[in-house]
Length: 222
Image 1 (tube, rainbow, N blue to C red):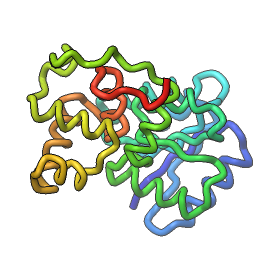
Image 2 (cartoon, helix red, strand yellow; image 1 turned 60 degrees about the horizontal axis):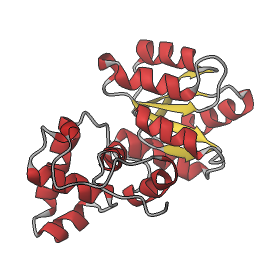
Image 3 (cartoon, one colour; image 1 turned 30 degrees about the vertical axis):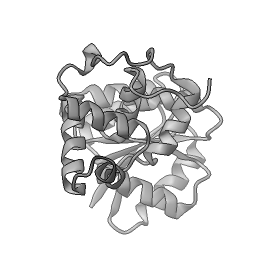
């Protein structure tokens, strides 16, 4: 059973999401919060598998709450899935940088919402790396182009792991990486997991951001 905490300051939206998630097979809503502060408190008390987090809420907003949850070692197994209207893409980048595992539009179909919760619980980023990258292209300013030297922040990575991170930042899947480097998909997955561990990343969304911020990948526009 996947346990879910729903945080949204709009009572109607929150009730609708609670009803939807609560009726899905294998999902159980264990708590509701009307603001970020309450979401953090309930996350620490209830230890849900997934938090469905609204961005704009009174007091502690969704981004600040996401950061608190994702930086708490006691909540290392809790995943945050951000709810958004998509008009505020910059907020979503902030949430991803705070540790969220992805984002979801409030207008998504019911099946998409349920599938998103399951995907995040499984450890996957909600968006494909390419879709996440497109969003980051618009709002995250990368470091200067790489000079051939490994950025200091990536000093713990091997040369192959830096190569893997670059390919993840370009939006390649494990299968694509395997084909590009002529290695097995299992080996590609192992490398990606090691990079995630070394960079303390929850999922591929954070790896894409790391690749951009360390100059391994250039934005498509601007």
